[in-house]
Image 1 (cartoon, one colour):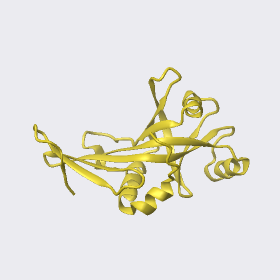
Image 2 (image 1 turned 30 degrees about the horizontal axis):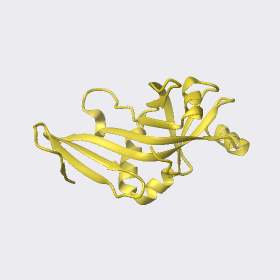
Image 3 (image 1 turned 90 degrees about the horizontal axis):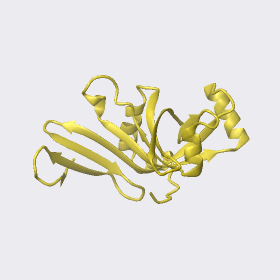
Length: 169
């Protein structure tokens, strides 16, 4: 994934409706799934709490946790919203992929700890979205909406057959 330096607030400004839909998908649950890259290149999946605060998507982690060490070495990551109970997916499957940039400014860390009650010490990362995807089922079709920096949201529909995917709202 290329280094875009995009922020959550830039995504919200570019695509406010889609950003609101994605954020709403994260809000009902505290715990989500973070994918990072291990030292050997294989994926690591970890539970994580995501925090939308001050125009950023933030990830707080215990000191020297494996996921924090992964991100310090290789900032590429994907964050999957908790799908919730049952089988209806409660509004679809949402994933944010990009880079996690560690916040090391002592004042910013102290402010975050004061606002959230996060136990210290901790690592704090800001997610720079490189791709945002929502997948949902609409009748007999799968609908995939995606965004990458510098482009408008793209929607593709796909049926349960051999027909190729097609654009759609």
